[in-house]
Amino acid sequence: MRRRTVLSAFAVLATMRTIPARAADSSTQKHPDVLDAKVRARGPEKFDFDVTVSSPYDTPQRYADALRVMGKDGAVFGERKLLHDHAGEQPFTRDLHDVTIPHGVRSVIVQARDQKYGYGGKTFEVALPGR
Image (tube, rainbow, N blue to C red; front, side, top):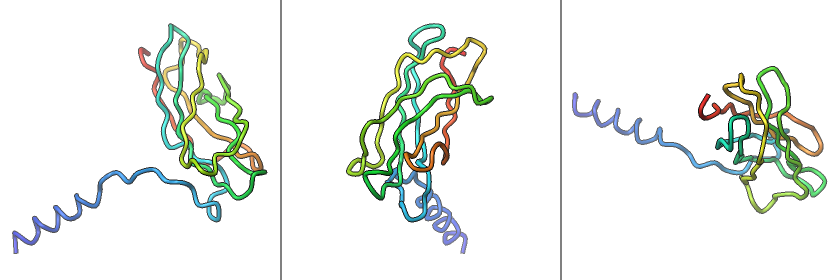
């Protein structure tokens, strides 16, 4: 009996592995989700970001068309507009360079925008290195 409990616990742990990111299902998702964001310091107040987004895609007229970095208070520090759809590349990663963030800010929120519905979906909070 005790051995069965150990094996059951092992089976549960085995199923808890990280599931790879995948494309959003446009039938259930309205806004793009930010799945990951990596940040590198370029200087005391300058940062570069690599942002991974999963976007619902149903037509060339509706796709994730921007991402932004903002403070918890909603102040926008940087935005990148995306000029084409990423239908064949889900999820996708894009960079946003040379973002100026005031010294007192320790972490930021990264968010993506849908061409039709605007900003929304899952955001990603990331700590700024060196702060």
